[in-house]
Image 1 (tube, rainbow, N blue to C red):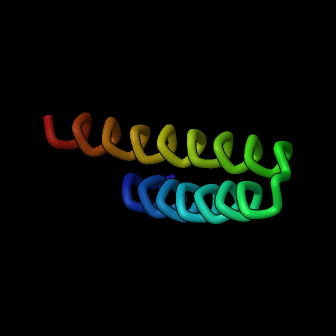
Image 2: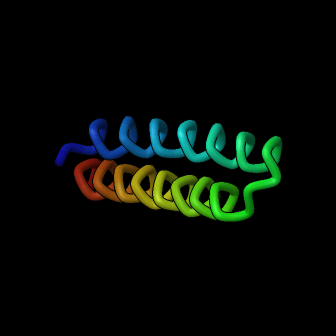
Length: 59
């Protein structure tokens, strides 16, 4: 996967996770809140992976 694809997927996962977490908070659903946080972390990791790929290509 390319640098930009990783960054884009990461952004989507962060946004979806944030929405999930918000719904979990609104409905007092601890499982949904936890899933949202997990998805946000996954997104952050994907974005970091994209950053690393970009840094490696730039050298």
